Length: 172
Image (cartoon, rainbow, N blue to C red; front, side, top):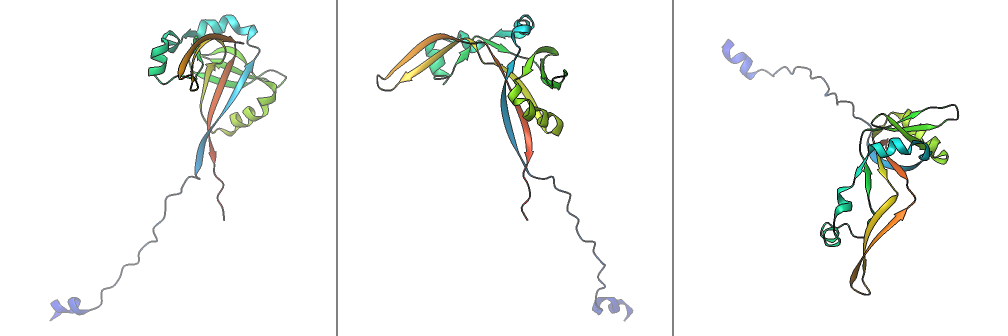
């Protein structure tokens, strides 16, 4: 009879621990900001040591169309390397380095924004790109149903793009 005693008695429930959810990171979105550099003239020799010929600049008119690059400026040079920024100088300058070579400063009007991003610790990446000099462009004129191929020149410039994570505030 003792064998059946446990069979017909109520099961004792073991107390269960409440399931603890893993702490969730606040949701965020990835954003980017673009900023032009100044003081490039003082660093042109160093900059030209860092640039390489842009492979797309070698493309023919037909190849540009085939690659879907029409209506885009294809600059002759591109700048490659790890890009970093640091707050320096007594005037609040933010210096930009590519492959540990000082190439210029963030323009004065953008320094506060960039300084906040640097201090936030949310920067995912910084890239530099040539935004001036010799370029090619293939434009499509729908009225004439024709492509036009031009070789032109802009004032030489460098733009950096800072990609960062911005947290989304929780709504109550």
